[in-house]
Length: 68
Image (cartoon, rainbow, N blue to C red; front, side):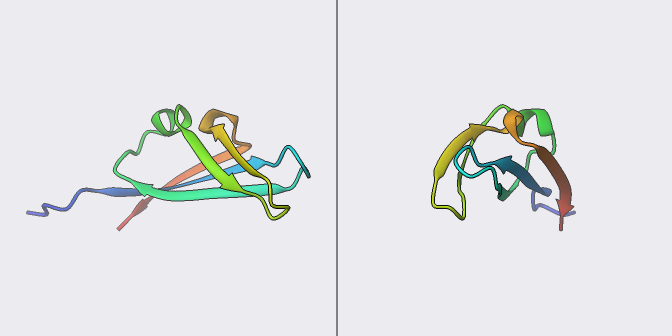
């Protein structure tokens, strides 16, 4: 029996409001449901130097994969 929690990798792609370039956030969680992650806020730093915090639902794209 495997006692380790199942992990999922989420990747969210945002658009920087300063320079309009893409900025990505990725992380591991036990949550598979994208709606749960979309409801949370995610901090990212763009290559232009701007730091933003946005709701996941505002991402241009959201991917999730099993992470074993």
